Amino acid sequence: MGRFLLQRLAGFVATLVAASVVVFLVLEVLPGDAAQVMLGPEAPAETVRALAHKLGVDRPPLARYLGWVEGMATGDLGTSYAYDTPVGELVAPSLALTLPLAALAMTLNTVLGLTLGLYAASRHNRLGDIVVMSLSQIGIALPTFWVGILLILLFAVALGWLPAGGFPGWSAGFWPALRALILPAVALALVQGAILARVTRAAVLDVMREDFVRTALAKGLSPGAALRRHVLRNAMIPIVTVLGLQLSSLLVLTIVVENVFSLPGLGHLILNAIANRDIVVVRDAVMLLAAMVVVVNFVVDLLYVAIDPRLSLREP
Image 1 (cartoon, one colour):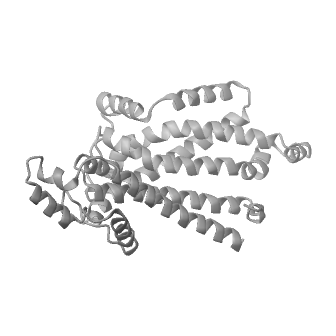
Image 2 (image 1 turned 30 degrees about the horizontal axis):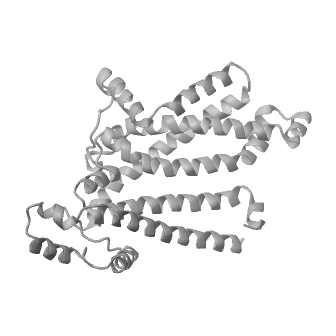
Image 3 (image 1 turned 120 degrees about the horizontal axis):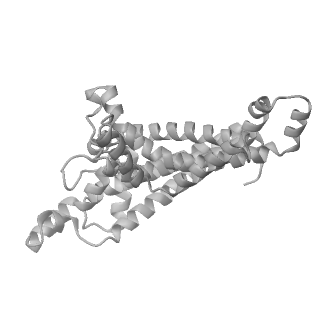
């Protein structure tokens, strides 16, 4: 078990380092100059060079990378070029929206996907199974942003039940802030829930065909009891895998949904920073998203062992 944890921890650190290198290099090859963008195309060359020196963008790439990594390790994310504000002060309020949105969407996705998947598996090849699988196929085919637009037209414009966009902030109260997140969370959860429902159905059906389940049923155990006691735990490995991938996807898809619903989250911050050539903000925000994805994958690895301890004894 200890060796397994050390291997996973080493992989976690190596992945973070690789992600930081990729993020830095990708932003390095982008055309344009931050100092030139800030001063305008007509600015004198001497002024541009002076600002570039002040911002530190004229230093060698390796020195800038090492300085960036050191800053992240010590909690100093740098200062925004466009806003002249510490990046941490820009990212913190954005995360206060993006993380609750992703958590709410993940909760809805898990409840919806597992419920429909178990329902379909328990009614294999019957009407309920066919209806659920047909609806899930439609859900998989729908783009998330288009689902968001449809939800706005129905629940905000036609019915007036929920706001069409914007975010009042948590200081306005829990319920007003939560109401602003319901439609974007549903837009994210519907598509991901359709995928999870199909995976859950397939995983449960595979386990239900195993000999130990047939033996339990032959001994008089009811199908519902067999599902709870024997099937679910053995079907959880593929389900947890998909849930981990979906949580990573939701963190990235919030960028699209936040712009559909005009939410000032991390995605909105990244797009504004790209438009302003604010490389410091873009680099830190993208690295933050990458780090969250790596953390999710690390937690999923640990959940594998919690579900089936035998996995920690296998050779990698």
